[in-house]
Image 1 (tube, rainbow, N blue to C red):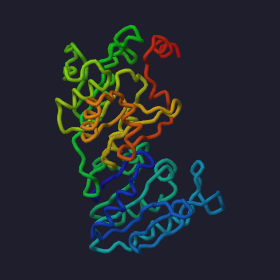
Image 2: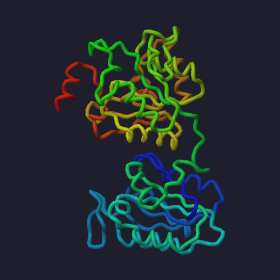
Image 3: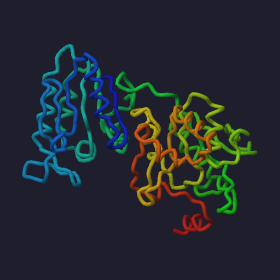
Image 4: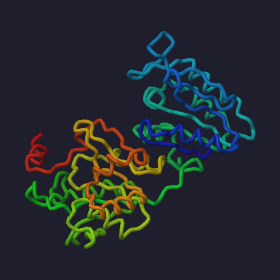
Length: 349
């Protein structure tokens, strides 16, 4: 079994670009293929690493020789040519790159399958690097028995700061009329449910709250320097106490949040090494309390705070290309439960 490395994250965050840049900057002997967009047609093509040639992959419309996945159509012959290019793997090959295994392979056993599995079983490899979108990751690990695969590790990955989870539970809950962190939507106080979601990503996690130490977890109260300014108070207070770390933030009032949504933030941060948040597809607003904040941006937010800028949403909307705002298709997952009728609707649906 080769050393298996998986580059994973949501669609469109630059996974292939990351690998392409690494291969261009190093002298590794690599075979395999990258899936990239043709600059003229804007459709996907395969870049074969062994021959430095490209072959068409994505068709403009369904044809007799294509396979379709939703609105996308792919030439069957391209899958065959891509796998056949692996047969030229030289003895001194440092790594094999497969970009990517998707729904066709993992859910339908088509596309590169069964050719990929057959090739894998008959070749001795040193290092295998595979691109897999995060929504398919767990199924891929099971399908290929890659329980020991390394996710978003390896020399092609950027060096990123340590990341700490932060549950924002310090709001006054004035609109809800009772403490939102103590409401039970899932058979436990909401702060605990949120804490378990974030800490389940295997990162140290703390809670931002005031005058509250009955939780059994590390709680950090607002510093006097930042008090009284809403969520930014908790964010800057925690970053002031736990220095030089990125913060994966989750507000306590998102009871429909799921771990995949948070995991996508973490994976994207690992690949892009920048602050990442979501834009709600329904409201078109950024969600600053479902986000990863890079240490350099935490420093900038602190500078802006002392200039009178206390809006985290404003930071995201004005930061430009230094941050990444991901789309999210399910507005329910990003819904903040702030009003009594929100809680009622949750319990009566």
